[in-house]
Every structure is written in C-alpha cells, then in structure tokens.
Amino acid sequence: MSFRLHGTAVSAGGRGVLIRGPSGAGKSDLALRLIDRGAALIADDTVILVRHPDGLMLSGDPAFAGQIELRGLGIGKVRNTASARLSAIVDLRADPPRFPLTRARLFGPFAIPFAQIDPRAASAPILVELLLNGAVLPLG
Image (tube, rainbow, N blue to C red; front, top):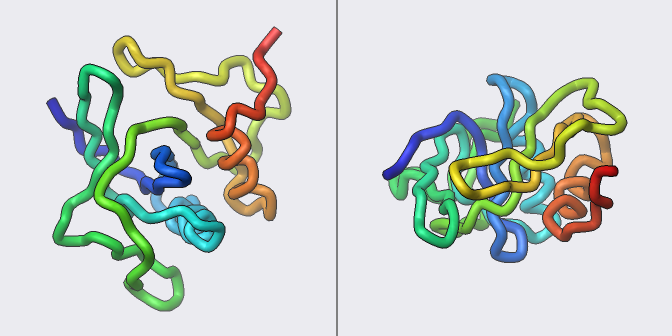
C-alpha cells in the first residue's frame, strides 16, 4: 500500500526525513541546507510513502529524481537517492513550542520521531540531525 504526501524528503546517513508544511513554508530550503551538510534528496513536493513489514519507505517519482525547487532560481539538480526508511518527521512552524508535548507520530504500528521546527532558524538543519541521531532527551 502506498500514499502520496505533500512534502519534501531527504536521506541523511541513510535515514529518511519527511519535511511537511504548507506551500512556501520552506520545505525545499531546509532540504537544500541538509543536502549542503551531506544529505541526499529523495523527493521534492510529492513524496511516496510505502508500508513494508519492517518500516515505512520514502521515495519519489523517478521522472523527477534529484530535482528541487530553488526559490528565485527555478528547478535545480542536486545529490539524490531513490529511497530511504522513514526515520523522522519534521513539521515546519514559524513559532514551534519550546517544550513539545509529544515527540513521535504513529503510522500504524510505527512510532516515528517527530519535531516542529522553525525553518528560518540557522539551527534548523542541525536540529533535524539531532532528532535523527536520537540526541533529544525523552519526555518526563
């Protein structure tokens, strides 16, 4: 079973990050900054989520592999990969809570690490990497 989602996905260290937010929120910009730090683009604008027995896989339309919107320039080609296992979800928000009530999103039996991040913050790509690396202390 697969689903198409509005968002952008990157692979950092082989782990997939789904970046969600409304149009113009900064999804592609955050992805570009992660790519600059060594990540690879999976999909920009439309992400395909496929359920496997051991997890959820992120992929994109092969016809658009490596293509990302570069606001002010147009469509560009960047380092890319075909797919990665969903390891974190990031929702873009201009004013995220300082101490969130939840740090995971459930997709069926899978609890996926989750954060709300201000995409304009200089630290945004670092926060995504910290989330992926399990550096966030548990709640409580």
